[in-house]
Each structure stands twice: as C-alpha cells, then as structure tokens.
Image (tube, rainbow, N blue to C red):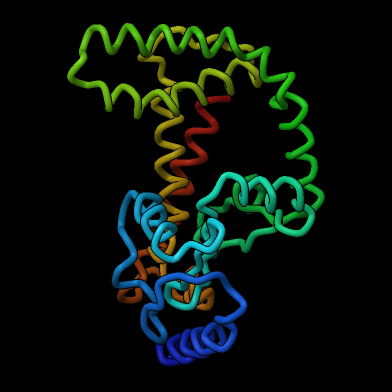
Length: 250
C-alpha cells in the first residue's frame, strides 16, 4: 500500500511539473513520471550537462526532471555569477534532499537552506576566501603546485591521475591551514584521503536521480528491510563516513 501511495504521489509531482514546464529553460523532455531517469548519466554527469547545454541551452541554461525532481543547470559562468552572486538573495536557497537527512547532514553548508546559519557560514567563508584574503593562501597553493610538478616529473604517464588528485589536495591543504594552522607538506598526508572520501560521499549523495527517496520523501519512513530500500542503509553508511572524516580531521 505504501508503494502504491508513493507511486501516486510521484505521478502527481510529475504531472505538476509537466504543467509548469513552460516556466523552465529548455532541455531533454524524457518520459512522463520518470523524466530522463533512463538517459541520465550514472557518473561524470557534468560532461553530459555540457553537451546538453550546447544542444538545448538558452543563455547557458537547461532544465529537466528526474523522477519528478526538477533540475536547472547553469552551463555558463556569466549566468552563474549573475544568478548566484549578483542575485544571491533570490537564488541562494536550495531544496534539502531526503538523502542528506538520512545522512544527518542538516547543518552542512552544502545542504542547508538560505537561513541564518547559512548566512553565518557565508560570512565566515567570505572573510577568509574573498579576492584579497585568498592571497594569504598562495604560499600553501604554491607548495602543493610544487608537489604536483614533482609527481608529474616522476610519473609522466599518470598525468591525469595527478591532476585529478590535485583538487582535493588543494582543498585539504588550505582548509587545514586556515582552520587548524596545520601545514600539509606531504603528498601522502592522511588528510588528503579524508578530503577525497568526503568529496566522494558528497558527490554520491547529491547525484541527480540516483536516490528515489529524493523524489518521494515519503520513502524515508519505510524501514530499511523493505525491498528496494537500500538507500536507508546507504544514507546511514555515508553519514557515518562523513562524521568519521570530520572527527579525524578535528
């Protein structure tokens, strides 16, 4: 009975989105109820978004829905700055996914709504990472750049792997230096592994269309032993992983 009710709700949401489709930017149409769930990429979805942006894009904007959940993608830096910076009061809010709730991430700056806590987070980040203050981190980034160059010189064939690891490496180095005064100097520092794991968990939890519970929040109340409800255990597992990473970093 619960599954039937959930499907009815999902259908209602899908029909609601269909009626309002003209209010959204263009994009792949998909099918009733499921949207583009069948053609949405399982990984590296940003590459597909870029292709769709060139095919459907209207000033760098595309939209689509996956299982009733409407997505709007900004494929243009100019549009992103215009909407998220210059008009941030209007567009800074975001829906809180049910999967994030299962992960106990209610206070994470990556998921919370545009409330007072979010404003505090943003003010603190702007204080240390604005255009002027970020110059204080150049020495840290230069140190990491030297490590990258040494890695490439030692193993030129692994160029792309070195570049892939550089992003979490920079994030870990700057974060640990700013938050804890901890200088990351070794490429094998365990904080790199923690940063990569945190990014992996965050990316997996936020993948559009991956978790049915994000489209049908009612499902979060179904027990984990119920068939096809693996998201319950997955949410708890990823939540424990994220907490472990933070506790180790602290």
